[in-house]
Length: 233
Length: 269
Image 1 (spheres, one colour):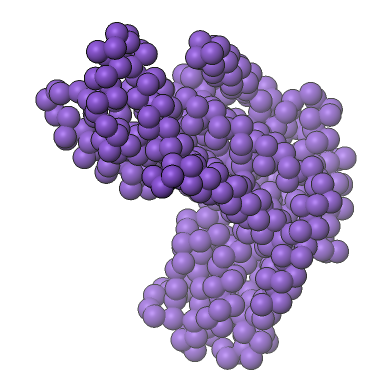
Image 2 (cartoon, rainbow over the protein chains, first blue to last red):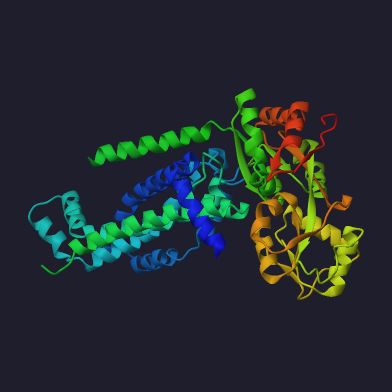
């Protein structure tokens, strides 16, 4: 118990004394994860639309596959990409292993199924009439697409936050693909793992607090969005 | 709006790729050297002198050698003499030299139920633990430390197996914590022990026997096998590590007030 209290106290001191290393790690985490999720949104939207509105062979199988990918362990994604990106692997010539790009790629693959599944569910529960009304009123396909997106904006936001929550806190894939290189591929979760292995619990807890605080912000946002999305007047 | 966003994304991705293309020197080393702070203490000097940035990848010795074998890093600094020699003999690495050594210690419960503190040798320690049947926690992760532990059992003429022998498959810090929780014995490198000591109830019971010394070697990845590796940078790093000035720095490095590594480069220190 003493260790926990002492580590917490030291952690707060580290955070608010402006320890540059810690804030650099936080910034890096944000940059990589934000970029990963931004890249994942367009394909995820297209896939979700195809799954919800499309009528093609294998649609339901595809839905099941994406649902299954929700429970793929991050390390498995990490390992698969590691083998592909290793210099001896099929994509070795790109020299991507142990770079931020590799980390981002792993996070991209991790959040894609979450986005697809949650947007798909949001589309399913939305009124199909939105699309048809927009089309009958003379809207182009693109325009109708954005009209429907607007209709499901709360579900969309929830999907983004859930996806972001998964990748910002993910350690397995980032560790394997980024290599936890100081100032380059060290993000919050890999830094926590490292500090813990060094026995530097205060730094680990400080980063844990940052992550929790961010998670709280994300949840507060979600709460706000859901509040606005309430069906009560 | 959407177009601008896409443009921005493309720009960001391209810039990310550019960073990746300009590869710095990649050094795979063990968690023990990185976690002790030795690399943070030494490497900025190398970068200042040569302008070469070093990307440090801290993993277990087994993984580090594997990264070298696959050509994913340029140079490795590890501690598992037999595995290193095999690595060089199989043509994966070249130019192996000794850099330094530290030592392993045996820690265990204060009460020392197996009575190892008075032992004369590491072999005797293991024989006593084996005979007492008291819990021994092993890394079990194919790391340099784990390989050394297995070698010690072997040279003591014992086969560690049974309920008392627990392979946890974790890093040294975690293993120490587990040994602490189950009140068992374990073998650890001194650096990790110093970092964790204050949080543990188990104590240092045995040290300073030559079989417990732990030499570190640095090896360049063979450029004939992997044409893309930065062999030039790796050679510079090796020459720098065994230079008298850096050898002296290694000897002066202190963790929690204690010297951790003894320089041992041929002719260096």
